[in-house]
Length: 279
Ligand SMILES: NC(=O)C1=CN([C@@H]2O[C@H](COP(=O)(O)OP(=O)(O)OC[C@H]3O[C@@H](n4cnc5c(N)ncnc54)[C@H](OP(=O)(O)O)[C@@H]3O)[C@@H](O)[C@H]2O)C=CC1
Ligand SMILES: O=C(O)[C@@H]1CCC=N1
View 1 (cartoon, rainbow, N blue to C red):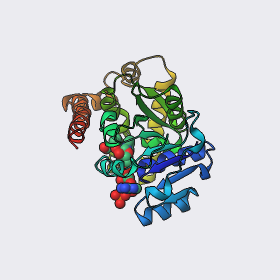
View 2 (cartoon, rainbow, N blue to C red):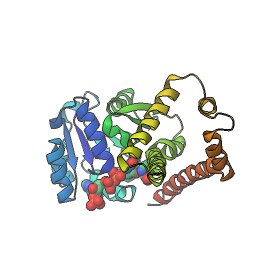
View 3 (cartoon, helix red, strand yellow):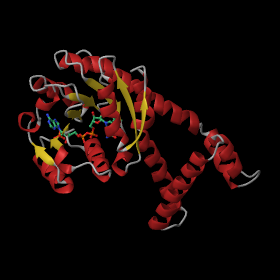
């Protein structure tokens, strides 16, 4: 199975890096990237095949008439660039499985842009895929075969965990939670590091303490059968330091503000879907 990424940006590079780390052969991966500088960088960094345009980068699937998974095309350009890519792609597709990672573009719209081509699976990965610790939400319409589902799952599983959703609408929630999620975590990491430095720690000390605290808390939550709220209560001694911090967060409604921010991401994902459905 040859995988061609159309668009070699942040997310494609995270997926490619994860696939290579899992032992996927570099000569089975091709990246079509219009930006010369980025294309050269990808070629040097990963040793994968690269091309500047679709006509030279998409491998036909002659061996695939028997209905195998065949070659896979991953749509990994920005959502605003996908319509133009689809216009070019529709004449080239020949039994390929098309996997979209684009936020907010419905499967039905991608199919329509591809002149009714139906082997399309929509996914929402995240950037920790770069280190094999991603999580991807996947959605397949009833047009996708079991083999197509399996192929999409295999690729995404190479870079982390997978979660199928039955209702495509739930991909908005997946996008808001895990697609964008790493950014929220980095935001919290940035805040902790900044606070540490303001309290007199060096940048290195603040970084080490912050990252190990995140890793440790996540490992504890993962390995515990108890809710995060219970684990939090165990850190919070009556009259102690944590209580002061949590009280300050509660007074400033930090939790409801975080929930509101995630709702905003969800709303934006829905808005994008509606905007793209007009194209
Ligand atoms: N970043 C993330 O965390 C996640 C992103 N996604 C989705 O992944 C997709 C890609 O996002 P991201 O990697 O961040 O975006 P990037 O902008 O980093 O990557 C897109 C790349 O595609 C290039 N490109 C544009 N048009 C074409 C074309 N016609 N043919 C080939 N290459 C082209 C762009 O070049 P140029 O910059 O010159 O336009 C750019 O290098 C988006 O749809 C996004 O919604 C999904 C999950 C998480
Ligand atoms: O911000 C975005 O739109 C994309 C989708 C999820 C993460 N990045």
